[in-house]
Amino acid sequence: MQKVRLADIAQKLGVSTVTVHNALSGRKGVSDEMRAKIVKAAKEMGYVASAASKKKAETDKVWNIGVLIAENYLAQYATYYWKMYQEFALAAVEKQCYTTVEVLKKDAEIHTLEIPEAFRGKHVDALAVIGEISGQYIQKLRQHMQMPLVFLDFYHVGIANDAVVADNFYAMYQMTELLFAQGLEDLAFVGSIDATSSIMDRFCGFMKAMISHHKTVAKEWMIQDRDELGNIGFELPQYMPQAFVCNCDLIAGMLIAKLEAAGYRVPEDISVVGFDNFSYPGYTKTKITTYEVDMKAMTKTALDKLLKQLKTPGGGRNRSMDVVSGQIRWKNSVRMK
Image (tube, rainbow, N blue to C red; front, side, top):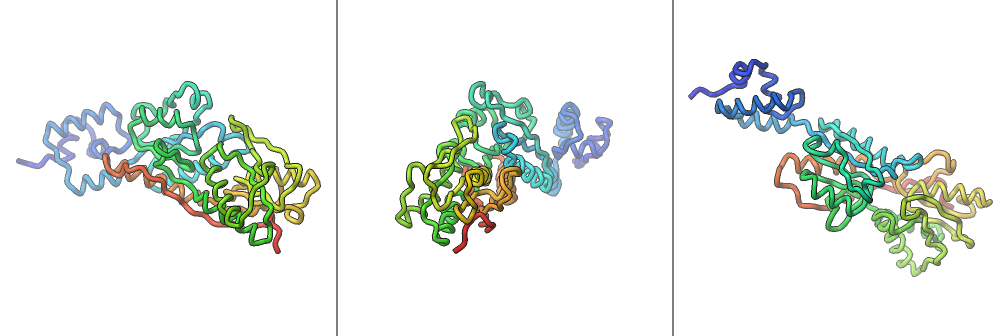
């Protein structure tokens, strides 16, 4: 029996061989109706793709990756996650993937649990969620979106542990030890520890260093920086520590501005460390000593996890959390010995 060629299918349907190739290899540029006709004709004619063709089709497959970001992370001051999305999109381009970004409205996240229209049906092949969202919304996604799903920069044990996170615990432990090494021992922590898993992990790293130096934290030096809705705001304590450990650079910048307005000098009077190495203009000119999160490595790792699942249907789905390390960035917000 003569082997059926792409050209035979093209001749039967009156289309080009390129169109047939694109349709059978999953490439874009072919309507759903025409793709269905070509696939049907190929089956009826007994077309069998060669091993090389199958491998090439897999390699050439163009995936559309959905990206979901909660609207509270896109406020005027909170552009950190938009930068993370940009890094993710660049990584996707390198892998010949498209990205479709949607903003998760607060009402949808908490009340209606509505999934964005762009992510329904077969509009996207996989989904990355950037920044922590509610557990109930995550469960909704898992119930109604049967596709690879990865969580970037947060995790929830049991429901969102197929994730990629920064090394929040040991990174903040290192930042706190940095202060002890400079003779700074009376320390405060700024961050609402129940707000996100990242802040909780950073606080635990802070406490590891405190405990190892047999230090306790005064109640007024445990400073909440946001309310239940994510609105940021805090006040300086009545009695000042030697240094503040802030859960992120945004808070560190706001804190330094408050200290300077109150007449304190940073770092001569009080030292401050942050986290992320992401600058927020308009708060302070002081360069913040911080821990740099490796966004590029995190986004590439998240994308690789999704592509592994897409390329091996039914396999590669063991949920796991990947921890990506960064590095300390010495600047001038810490007093040296």
